[in-house]
Image (cartoon, rainbow, N blue to C red; front, side):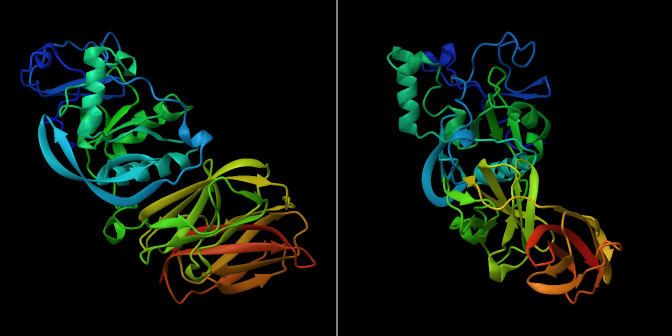
Length: 401
């Protein structure tokens, strides 16, 4: 069972008792897939269904449009600071970092970064609209509510009793295309749950942790992976190279955009570089995902750039063998299917040449034997008769003895 389900109060609106200064009731409402569960102390509020016939609990207005769709942002800043968090009026120390430009408790931010990366691979863009709130911020919002003098008189919990003060609550951009549906299907895998029936944008990290996140490495001082040659908002000619800086635990990096794989690399000395020629120009959000030697995701980075006229796609290349993600005995045959003016295909892994072939009828076969086994990234580059690149593709496979 996720942690904290019976000990925390989900409502971010003050009860009548709170107006009178009485202790707040502890309760949690968990909404998943249209089901409602009430845990903790008995409350007088009757819930007939999640999001139906229920008063506003959290006191927030719906989030604005997807920030990532309009502004390129760093996924997460691991520069940590100490804050005082609150849960049911009890103060405790927490460590806060920044995700999508908003503060969040570090474990929450790590889990969210992994969830955001998974969503991006499915072509869905998550962004944080509101995260951790300090005591001064909550006092301001509560005063606005009580005095109806600011913040549109929106409901707000008594200072010390808002879920946002724990650092574990995030308001997400559920008004953006595909976001809410993706969260209802996948958020629990990353420890996030919708806890306020009337607010589909309010999600809380209740655990367990989905694995190491960007701020887990190096004591949370630096991101696991970050782009080295692409800057947010930059303009780049088509056929662009993607390079990153990554921590020592990273074995390989994959690159995606709108759920489509652009490439992969295990060549650390070359910045895990990969090249891609887009079929269309304009704004592109590129996501770099870092993995360790066991193919466990360590961290992600993203950057939004504008792709301008440059190289154009002259053909295509896809691996016939080995299939991406498969396990294969060492000494495998490499074969590809190509389209376009391809005269030769060259294969490499980690900066080392594996061989090349001109046998188009045989799907440009090369047999490769590796000295280092485990998860490997194999890249095929197709060139024309003049040696000019036509297309390239990478596959990630597990090699066994």
